[in-house]
Length: 253
Image (cartoon, rainbow, N blue to C red):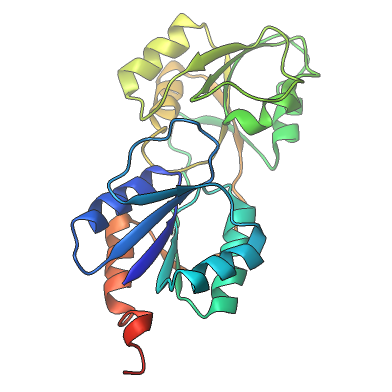
């Protein structure tokens, strides 16, 4: 079975690891190309966009893809929407690997906001040391709020010209453990965290550390995005692939 994994997440890498040793599948992992040095993968990898839903549909047909697993980031709504449209157009089954969102626990001090702009406004007027855990695409929203001191952790440097003045960049790749996150928040004297509700374990340690330190977290809520058959783990995605039926090349034989 020819499988296309739309990736860029921990779950996508886990799925690639599982499929790589399974002779039932021939997988390709597609990455958006937002990092120039992506983590090596055990399956064939392509980098770059498809040219919208039409381009993805053409790719599925040209490469005789039998099934697609959307394991993109929870906030990658455009790619997921393109996957739904393209798979319907090409007649290819689609599963969406959706990691559960984080839920507030006792001791958490969350302010939940709908957008990054709302998060910037929620910081208030009093100067604060802010840890931005957002990825590099949204940093420019904080540039107008110059009273704060910002620290951001990224895999690669941002490309925007408008960035917060004096922004401190920590170039690191997760996952991050609790002790390291606790040390980071203390060493940087962080007063508040701004985070997307990405879910999963890879970056949850900062939330646990904030809970222990009693730090407030401005949490940008996750919007529902278009999806196929929802699965919640790499193992569940493999099970879905296994039960989805024979490859396209054998259907109707």
